[in-house]
Image (tube, rainbow, N blue to C red):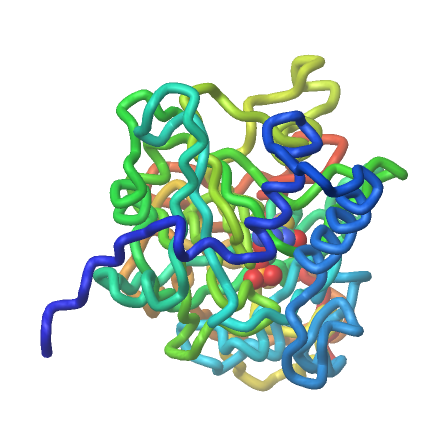
Length: 428
Ligand SMILES: Nc1nc2c(c(=O)[nH]1)N[C@H]1C(S)=C(S)[C@@H](COP(=O)(O)O)O[C@H]1N2
Ligand SMILES: [Mo]
């Protein structure tokens, strides 16, 4: 095979709609000339191109008339508004990687159905090399990314709010946000290019400190305020370390709901960092802020400073049984209980299980070689002897010494629940 050509990102690749929109914007800002065209006409054009850019590219029949494109049968998911919480009993026996059709979905608005061949990634900002003050965007098409060296990495994507409902059901606390059980996590094999390779080809300056990927999905309105398109800054050190621009998930082209054609994948960090449907990346020589690292994704509450904690980065440690909540088990029969544990701070080194509501514990058998950024499957056998209701508990410890506590300190938005979850079952 001939060597893959290195793409030469150039202005000729600029998507016409985006270019038109930018030019119109420049005109409105007094930076461009528009002789002979009325202001009114230009404003009409700007509105039209803005709408064209914001709308999903017409594609297959199901052009996101529902927030999520893939089927969400109730055996697989609990639907929560624009989101889908995976059912752990449906994950039983599915292998190490979460199949794409069972992978949870967290959408701020709705899945845009995009065509890879119309897609462009635009890099811009003061953290790219170029003459001072020069706005020098660099664009990559889908084929340009495909021509770069590909890397494959297994990692979880987990929402910062995973397990949020337990603040209420276990701790009696009121928190805001989607009341996820434990299904806002999945592990996939992601294939794509290193963000580092793309940043270097775009002319990363030594002064760059933050990069901010932004999705092309609709603007997000929260409490009546338009916060703009979903975007969150990432320190350049993390972006250069292990971040991918992924175009495949478990050997398939990235599904629509998971960011087709290209998403960011930030291993070990809260899911919001892994921006789906990425359309542009601002590269900045100044620190960047967005609602997603100021208002959201910090810890607020009695135990935290008034401005909140630092922006959330690594995920916490959690465990789940591959069993329905309230499952019925037969007394006197030996069964094998299966589950998985994971952490953003290292591999899972140990899991202890209690089948008597936390009175006694025994170590689970680990089925996977401990690995960072993903989970470890485990099992214990159990012969229930007492009929009635009880709770199953699993407590993981990771290689950095983090161990699941009995309770999680309250934060008002219910992020990073890491306490041991009490899983109700009935023995009959
Ligand atoms: N553009 C965009 N990216 C996004 C989101 C979004 O709504 N829009 N949601 C984020 C959040 S909060 C999470 S938890 C993950 C969920 O990824 P998934 O839907 O592929 O499971 O995507 C992140 N990336
Ligand atoms: Mo999330």
